[in-house]
Image (cartoon, rainbow, N blue to C red; front, top):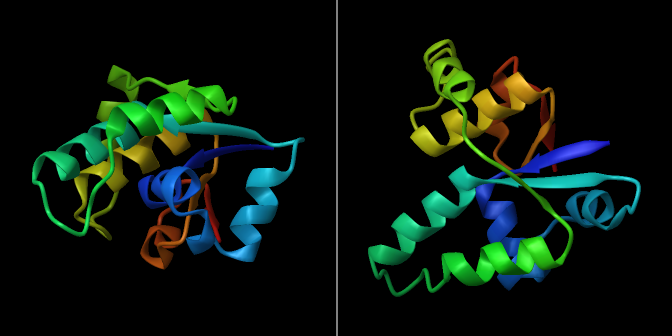
Length: 128
């Protein structure tokens, strides 16, 4: 099965694996699953890192390289994804999450997340 990871899972996989739930670890470690990350994840991490908050010390370049080295597939953002954002109901205001949901819907890849609010969307969501 294919999974697109939400940004918090991307961060946890690369810098804090102890934060992953048992279900997330199982899905991520299953060699039959194809794991995706998005340019959106890297963009969100880069923005948060640029704010230089003491509780967020994550380097977007390091995260991207670690994911590529681990065999994750990078999903670029397309115009179709951007249009899909406008078609989503307003259950959630986070622009990064909304774009990730639009990507998941357009690509038919479940968005793996620990954010229960995202499960309210009709886009494919795999709550861990």
